[in-house]
Length: 368
Image (cartoon, rainbow, N blue to C red; front, top):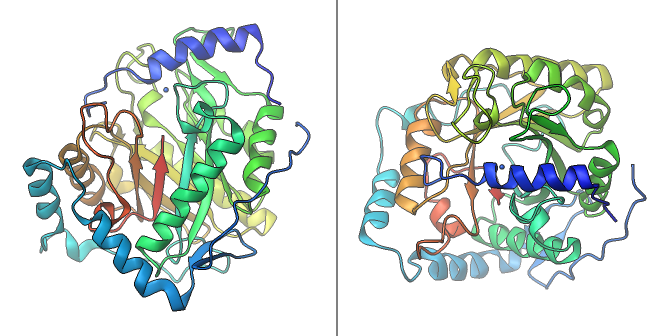
């Protein structure tokens, strides 16, 4: 059981409010626990690697049914439909930039053959994402259902489940170091890691640096990232060194130089420990969140995903994906779905079938 100290409770309560502010895009080692796996039905299987894939004999029927059911969900308005149609039209300038030219993936690489479906948050807060909103077992069962939906929607890409933990949390208080960030205890990180490890899934450690820096915050996380199934995410929204503002009051920013430092650092870990390629998630929903994005580099040992994590109505999410992810190709793309913020004005949550109409098709899907 994860225990919450009085200090952590106060800080996480303050942070939850900061992390959920109305941002411009519509929009904050324990004992290993036993987890009961959801019983798969006859149309899919869980492989030893934790990948959910639709079996060949049921793929066509399931995919067709799922596509028809998800194609035009009730409540989708004209503006959303027009935006989605616009996104799916051939774009002679941008489409030829995708897929990004890259060397053949190294053995053990997750992308591009698979799709990742992740649950995001922090178990110390119910307001920072689905990972902390529900009890562990309920949350994991929900994740199982989402993984199956995506596997049915696109049988060509087996789906790998993941948990995405905010392990360094930007906060509204300066803290002892005056850096406006709170580092989660190793025991808590290890416990959440054990939840997804029991499902043979992937674990992402997310870093919100506050007034610190990527270069200062990452080294302490190296022991976790030396595991082959642990990967990294950095969140420019809460990087405040440039603005000097308190996290949550304005949108932060990181430069390609910061991203490239993380890439080189992960590359060194993967090479030294002889690990499969690492994945680096970079969150983005405005242009200024990632400056000089076209200068971001990747290596055969590090796969970079630019994740569109803005919330709001579907048309706005489509536009943001186009302007800040598709228009500035890096390597792979991601798309974030918010159970509450995306639907609070009555819009149905985007379905796998709708998201898969985007070009390029996101290979990293995150739910908050």
